[in-house]
Length: 352
Image 1 (cartoon, rainbow, N blue to C red):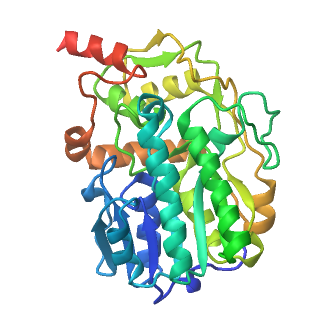
Image 2 (cartoon, helix red, strand yellow):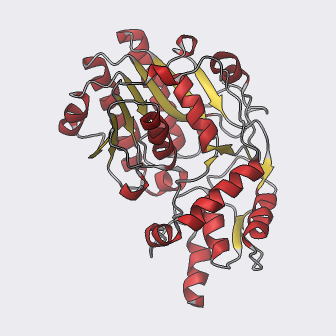
């Protein structure tokens, strides 16, 4: 990916908010192995697990909320030179169910992290945006950075766009170097399944239990799945490439994958004979197709999505098998759950 970004991090303090999550945990591991000192992980564990934080002597975990100024004072007292802001109220369905919490965490929380970054002279602020969020349902494919929509369908999408706008404000007004990355449908080792999680970990979890995989709608909708290792490589470059400052960049595979094909593939890999169960499409899920242009990331970061989808699925499945006991204990599908999974899990409970 062009110039080697690793030397930028050696012996430098780096803050990763949301560092116990799937992308965050993999980024923390890469930073720790690059010699960043310390790698500060700030996470409230509301949608992640401490066992998912890599165990390295140069990793410092601080449990806390990004809305808490006292917690932020504690982590910024360590003077991180680079901040990777991944913490958010995840994700679409969760924000539909709890819109006020979404804006408090992903809106106000982001402002507070930006404010502390300015006050402590942070050199670079890398924001984790969402390409699945801000383009709306009518944008032409492939999705390009200059096309954004004001007609968004979930609070999560609105708050992710709001975060980008506040990054621009802190860049223009205070000179904080910001880079805005837009992830598309991340997957890979580190994401525990649950009622508000992404489709791939949930499909693998249910398939390993021998259950039919629930598809909302026809299954012909497409998504642009991006392996977490490729996202981490992009983030490492975003933290040091000068030309990236102020830019928005899609981080994706640039390839469409049908959901029904995905379900069939996971059933094949796991040996699941239960097949597929179709259910009603979610009201907010208005995008039939997603595929990103990655031209800007290629040009600015030297980004390449190097992990073939089949290889990424195999690595994810291996992580599930190697960590099954912890994953099965941590996976959360509680009573009174969201409409995204309640029909499927209700039938699961009836079978038990």
